[in-house]
Image 1 (cartoon, rainbow, N blue to C red):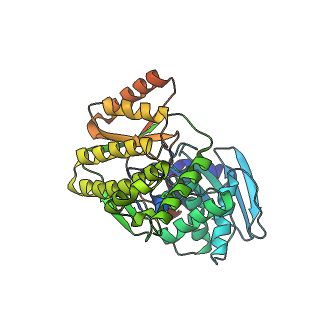
Image 2 (cartoon, helix red, strand yellow):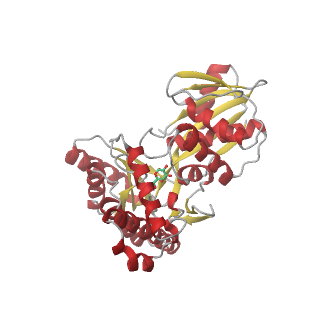
Image 3 (cartoon, rainbow, N blue to C red):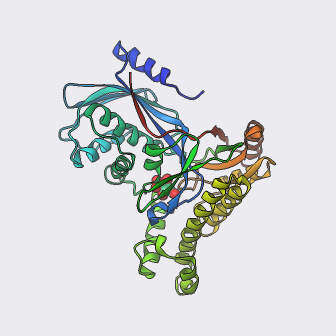
Length: 380
Ligand code: GLA
């Protein structure tokens, strides 16, 4: 059962003896296509999912933030004056407060409860959702105007500078700017967003391999610097500026690994463009085929897939209702995403989970999801 507004209101009321003043919802995300392109100033096509982080809160008259996490059964408190880094889930809140303050916002303290149903470490951006949800909470009580792109940038800054993870903009922006029933074509250079409708009769299914890999951060940073090396070779700001023609003319001069990394990014950007065209035409088969190609490129050229992800994608593609499937997010573990005929999605979920479990011995989780609005704050 997904978490609801009633659940979070009940959590708040049980702790504070009265209802909250604000309810915030910030969704996780799944990316349909456009992987490892965001930090190359390229294109991505994520959607905000039904699973989200919820915060119920009320303002305080001092400069303290006190939050109870229902998921961790723990309470944390910090002052907005003189914050220093520590550890644990509260760092996402502190880091976001730091980024907002650094951008010149005068913040009001608040107290509340936080609870979510975005699985942690699965590649569905629970941390981005917490950052964006925190920003939305501060914006509500501190009367800061909510501009999704600006706030996503601040969430990313919290992640980069406070948490120390060198991510791109996709996750925070998807959580901040999601649209009901639509994926978002994001230009990660301009942050321009174009909604792309999910084809009629198609369900998006998230397939969690149940595997979590350490060392994702170091492999991620290594990929980033390989892309930067390739961009320097082509004398451009980012790989986004290299056309396939230019790449093909000069690729032979590159060392083999750099050549393959660049090929993934350059062809992936083109696939995103085609995927949006396919969605505009309502052509689920074409979209699915591009997703399959994306997976192959991530597996062979970018080398960020894993045995578990490959097994999941294979299991998904065996089902007759599947249009296409690929790994999603940073990779190495976590989730795959498939698009399937909506009327067969329950059967798909059951059979793919069983096949995958049989093939790998891992316990999967399967979520059928719609595309939801981005972070919202509602006054009670
Ligand atoms: C992680 C990062 C994103 C993006 C993806 C890969 O989710 O947080 O910024 O780079 O990996 O596409």
